[in-house]
Structures are given as C-alpha cells and as structure tokens.
Amino acid sequence: MTKRRIRMVTVDMDGTLVGPDGQVSARNLAAMHAAERAGVEIVIATGRRHSYAMKVLRGLGLNEENGLITSNGAVIRTVGAELLGRSLLRRETGEWLCRQIGEFRRALLVTFDRVMADGDDTHGALVVEGAEELQGSIGKWMTANARYIEKVVPIEESLGREGMIQMMLCGTIERMREAEALLLTDPKVLGVGLAPLRRAEVRREGVEAPAVLPEAALHRTEYPERDLCIVDILPAGCSKGTAVMELAGRRGLKAEEILAIGDNWNDVSMLDAAGSAVLMGNAPPDLKEIAAGRGWVVGSRHDADGVAEVIEAALDDALEMPVMARSGKSD
Image (cartoon, rainbow, N blue to C red):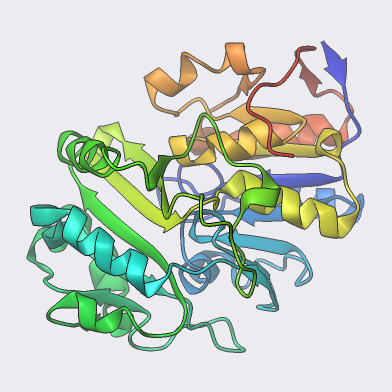
C-alpha cells in the first residue's frame, strides 16, 4: 500500500456524492469545504447536464473556479459556468444514430448545451419525439425538467441546432442492454468504460478529427434496485476520464495527484485515469467484482457519507491505495 499527496478530488454525483434524498449530506459538504481550505480542488464529474447538476450544487458554497464536468465528459465548465471545453455530436452522426436505434427511439432524448450566464438552461435544451416511454422509466426526472423539454416530430428535425452534446436512452436494464448491443454491432460506435480513448483522441469543438475515429461512444449507468439503465451516447472519445485529464492538464497536475470517487460504469474511465480511485460500496455487484484487479478501493455507501470518509482520510494522509500498475489509464 502507498500514500499519495492529493491535489484534486473528482467526485461523481448520483449514487456517490448525492444521497437517496437527492441532497449532499452535511458531512460530505464539510469534507469538501475542508479539502478546499487545504488547497485541494473539488471537481464534480457527473452524467447530468450543467444546469441539472447546479440544482443540487447551487448554494453549497463551493469555489466557483472549481471544475464541473457534465454530460459524462462532453462539457467542462467551472461551477461559476465559465465554459472551458466541450465536444459536440455532428448532425450526420445524430441522424445515423436515429436510424440505427430503430424502435428504441421511443426511449430517446437529445441534449443541447444551452447554458446561460447564470448556469441555467433554456427551453429546448432537451428534445424528445414522444414522452410516454420516458415517463415510464424516468418520470420524476421528466417532471423536474419539464420546462426545458421540447417535443419535435420527427426528432431528426432538431438535430441541426447548435450545441448537440448527447443522446440518451432510458429503460429497464435488460431493454437498455439490448439497445447497447444493437448499437455496438456497428464499428462506428464505441463501448466506453473499460478501455477509454486517450485524451489526444477526443474530438473537441473546433478541432478537426481524423476520419478513422468512431462516431459515437456509449456510457452506461445502472441502478439495479430501480431496474433502471441509462445509456448516454456521446461524441467519440468523450468520457469522464478524458475530461478529468484535460482539466488536470490545465491545472498542471499529474494523474498521481488526483483522487477519483464514483459508483457506476460511466465512472470507470475516471477511476482508471486517476492515480487513486475509490468505488462506492453501493456500486453494481459486477462492477465491484473488478475493483481489486484495477487498483480501486471499495469504500462505504452513498447513504453512509462514503465521500466524506474518503476525503477525510486523504486530508489526514491516511488514504492508502494498492501499489500496482493501473490499467486502462487515460494519458
């Protein structure tokens, strides 16, 4: 085991930082503030889009210069809403994906980056073709985001808008694994999680990408207790891990100085990219099975202040990690 000096902590939200009540506990918040006072940057890295993340983070008193990675790595802003970088899905890619998913399009939602200076979104940031199936799987989320959702039929007519960052499929775990398998039959689609692309392979806005790159990457999040699976479809090369390392590069930090905390499959690239990684105790069982082999520590649950426990140990110089070659690391 070894101890490392931590200068950045990257934390997932749902199932990690946020408890079952949808809020950040007092102990978790106190630990993050203590880290900031110690000169450690707290970076939130979430599958949520920026404005939906801020519904929880606004008012917590976090440093507004801290990084906020949203949409599973497609967008990097500060907590104060300054745009640092983003990756966009091409219209042609979106149109092809709509054809490729077939009957699963009933479970499709498209996200556009339309964040204003105050960190909120505008109407049309979320586009659906039909809401019935989505209401059945993520009804509370649909209600909470109703003022941002626009119905467009056919949904392809919305894809020419500026700022398309993400497509999302939602449903039961079995149904979404079928959708994922269907998409992965085409080599233009990457399964992201256990082999994230290197930072140099990310297609960033305004940068021409080599023609050999895949068009899209899949990021899966599963909640077995709710039989819910979300499959995010992002520009090829996007992941939390690549975004974390891009932000670290801006800060002049090395991977060894980063501690990552997450709970799900969409966190794998981030856990692998960081020098130290903790998987939450409430992670899916099949993900916990691979933790030791990848050099991750399994911590406490999200409903037991697991994030605070990890940060407190890091600040007390008591966080010990296995000494081993970390596989799948983003560079």
